Each structure stands twice: as structure tokens, then as C-alpha cells.
Image (cartoon, rainbow, N blue to C red; front, side):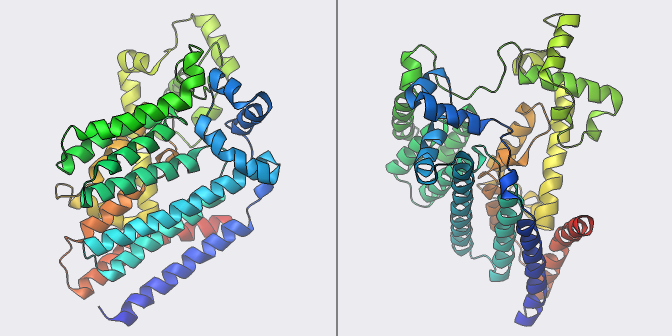
Length: 408
């Protein structure tokens, strides 16, 4: 491939991305960050009532503990959240680029392909994550997930017992933030199977995992409340009921496949749920996700298919035709594609709402790794490779121009 041909494509692409990045940051009102998930209120109680008391009641333990040193420096809760979450995203960006760089060297990926994939990842974080930062634990969880993935790669390259121990410890920290971290257990089993490690290596993983969980959650456990997590549900109703009522109404009016972002969340309030239950009986809405699986499988299936389509469309707009590369080589030896598909499916399935891309924070690096490792099978001439790159970035350019057109 002639260098001038490659840079003729890369430089305008980077200029477009830099322009969008500058536009987003110049128009970002950092003082307008709201507390939609009430994490700032949760942290305020953590400070006022003390860590031990709040852990007993249920809170995001590790996230609040990580925030506290930054609060001591700033003295302002909102500034604490902004600074800490930005730091997490910056570290995610640095570690993500390092992982992609090491993968490209290991699999001897064509340099120009590596440039494009890394550039797309950089601006994915800068344009899709950083300007939309909010006051919740997504950025921190994403960083911890990325660290787990990093040590998983290290374990595949050179299996060590202490890699499993580090992964167990980090996952224990994650389970001190959100219970959804339990979804990583199948991934750990996958690592053992893929790296031909012995099942007894689970011991090196489980001991630090269990010890970390017991230490972090000890106040809540000793109080007889089990593990301590932030429960966003009101006392008398829950989000499953709220979402089911909204999804059912949308299905009747426009159909599930016409759902817009936030439409489920905005369709009703918890007071509407209470009124509906009052009029139709306590059993008129599902009380748990298992209840949805058993009694409303068709509605759940439609919602899952919609979410899968939404996730694919999102990444296709952001990563372009490169998204198709790992799918084309799906059954080749591609370690991280299957886990990404697993996480993508499971979040689309259990959400029972409009899935949010932020839930895949940190995990999305698996898709970028899969693209890079898939590129090793592209045995093409330089001119054909350049043509592949041009075709792959067309959806990205189209999406960016469309964004600028409607924003300016």
C-alpha cells in the first residue's frame, strides 16, 4: 500500500473526528450534569451517616469508597463525581489502547488497519463516552471490567496462578458495586477452557473473590441483610413492573420495534404503576424478571430482538464495516468475540427495557480486539486492503456528517 494513499484517507478521517470532538466539548455544559440515578444523593448519605451504617442499609460500597478521597480534595460532591469519572475514562482509554497495540503486535496485524481501529476506539471514548458523562458508577465499573480483560489476556499468553487471583480480587471489587458483575462468572470459566488451564485454578480465583466479598460486605452480612447493593426500587413497587407496564402500552400503540430511546423510562411513573395495581390487582404486573420469563415470553423475546438490533446498529454506526470482520470469521479462533456476543445478548435479554450502551462499558474492548484478531485472516493485496478500509469507514463518515448537519 502506498503511504500517500493511506494518509489521504486517514488524515481527513481524523480531522472529521477531531472536529466532532471539539464541537462536543465546546458545547458541553459541565454544570448541567444531573443526578438521575441518585448516586450523588447516595454518596451524600455515605458521608453524612458513615460508611458502616450505609453499607448495612445497602449502597454502592466500592464506588463510594473510591470517590471519598476525591471528595476530601474538592469538598464538592458534583465536582468529585465529574473528576473521578473523567479519570476512569482516561485510564480506560490508555489501557484500551495499550491492549489493542499489544494485540496488533502479537497477531502481526497490518499497521494501517491498527491505526484505524485504534483511532476509532480513541474517538469512541472521546466522543461517545466523555461528553455524556453522568453521575453514576458506569465509568468505574468499565475500568474494572477492562482490568479483568487485561489480565485475562495475560493469562492466555502465559498462564499464571496469580492472574486468576488478581481477576478474583477485581471481580470481588465489582461485586462491591453492582450485582450484575456476577455475569462475569461464565467468562472466567471460558478463560479456563480456552487457555487449557486446570479446573483447580478456580481455587486461585475463588479464594480472593470470596474473601474480598466477605470483607467489603461484612457490615451488611453481620446485620443479617446479605450483600449490600444500591437498590433503586421503591419499597412497594419495582422497575420490572414499571417497565412491563410501559412496554405493554407501547406494544399496543406503536409496536415494540418503534420504541425510541428513553420512551420506556418516560412512559409512566411509579405512581402510575401503583394506580394500575390498585385498579387491576397485585398480580396484574410481573413482580420479577423470572415472572416475565415464565408469563410473558413473547414480549420478552420481542424486547430482546429489538435491543440486539439497537446494539448492532449503534456499533455499526460507530465502528462501521469493521464490525462485520469478526462476524465473517466467527468460527475461527477468535477468543474475545464469543464473550462479547454473550455479554451483548445477556444485557439485551435481562434489561427488559431499552438497553443502554453504557452498560457495556469496558466490555466493548472485546469487540475491538475481535476486529483486530479477525484482520489477521484478511490475506489481501495492499490495494484491496485500502478499498476494504474505505468501504468500512463509509458508515462512520455518514453518521458523523449527519450528526454535524443536525447539530450545527
